[in-house]
Length: 373
Image (tube, rainbow, N blue to C red; front, side, top):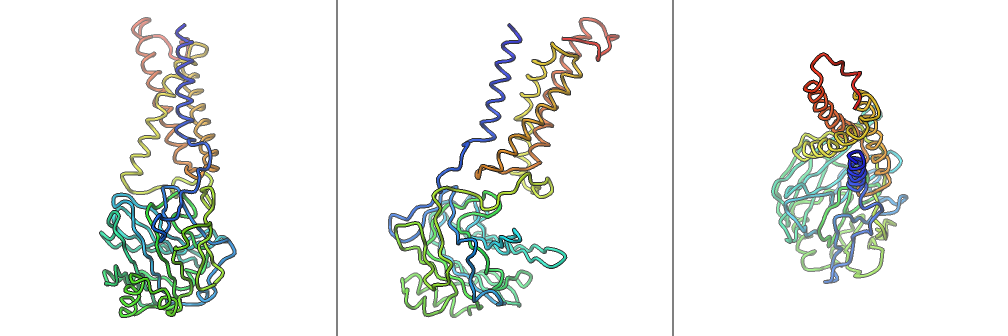
């Protein structure tokens, strides 16, 4: 009777772990919709739009200086996500991406040389406000990068720079091409230039965008221009006809989701990373404890412990392999390590408890490896 109860508990724990690791078991619908006002696209937690894999901006391929104008309204100021990214599919690298990090603006650049890759980052503090429209302008040249908010210069970095060629790849808006990192909010406009805008041009363009002066914006000859005003359909047209229309997929996906990311790629020196590690360890402790209790009557205790740890590792590996096919989950080796550790802790707890009980019953001279339960 006791073993049957343990078996039911083990099945329940296993189902709970599988549900937690694989839910929602399928790719959700793409959470992108046209704004009820007719001006803008609304992005949910799992949403993206993107240019086709073959698309590029011809005028940007050989350029040095560049500029980006982006008109957004975030849903939150205490969480973040990737607002846009430029991706090179053949190399699987994101040359430039723009993120909301809590309420900060975060820019990331990856330069890929023949021998190595160099990452640079640029933060601008306290930019985003919940449900408040924000017009960002990023201008960059070999002398550095400047960030403007609503036409006003807020920060300059000479150490951070992007070139026009960094913006010539596949464009993804609302998410990151390699992992699930959705941004929630509304996008009303986006323009990309193959030159550095001056401070005067930045302010003039801001006034034009706010006044809805579409003709004047187009006369500035951006390389690509998206106004997000169609109000319906599954395509956001590039008004400069560069061949880089943005498509709204029916279902959400991660463009090139990694398979079993290595621990050093997953490592992040943040509290959220530590919290996830602790959750992954703690979540498998019950599995180790109850499965070891269930297996121990039929075999020596030390073998039951080993079998339980192996079982926990196999279950975790299975989950991580399946997660590679689920866009809302991340497939990584860190979880396998932490889940197996949690299983080992649970099995060790059972081992210690049974060992203590056996000593109390039979005396300390009993050999542990000869004890059957």
